Length: 217
Image 1 (tube, helix red, strand yellow):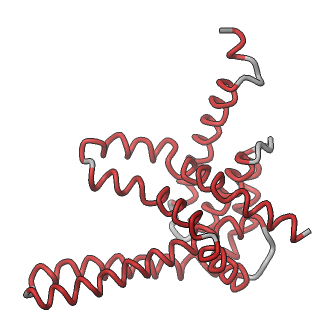
Image 2 (spheres, one colour; image 1 turned 120 degrees about the vertical axis):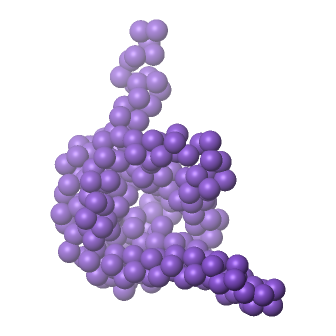
């Protein structure tokens, strides 16, 4: 038992990482409360979780706050448009569902096809977004430059993109398809959720991001 509590033991490192994720998640949720600052909060979360994925020790609160403040202004150039598009797509998806319920079979087929295209567009946008956030967190570039690189990575690293999207949608899928797990999922998201998702995506994206860091030096 004493060996398990050594500072270099796997159990101690796992416990420390879990505690760090709880702190990062709380900071990120608070940073997302004003909505317009959520882009900077997610960027700060991506930076800290990527450092954790690399096993780079640091002051997580200090790093999170430094990145949040440094990226806040730039985030206003990309986060509100992304948020607006996602909100519009969600509203249109709900509208298509309601119309398909009230329309005939032929109309429902057409609306279903339109809804499918809309969902595909949302997937493309989210696929670019899961790369945009770590790029903003780790590299200096203009917003159009980050966006273009994010689209290239989303397509060029399609397998990693799909894995990241699975991480993003997993909580919503649990809530929709496993009603008995809704309360547990909600509590998990409050305690660890966003930071844990960021950490999993950092593990998935780490190889690509590290290669980009090497080539940018």
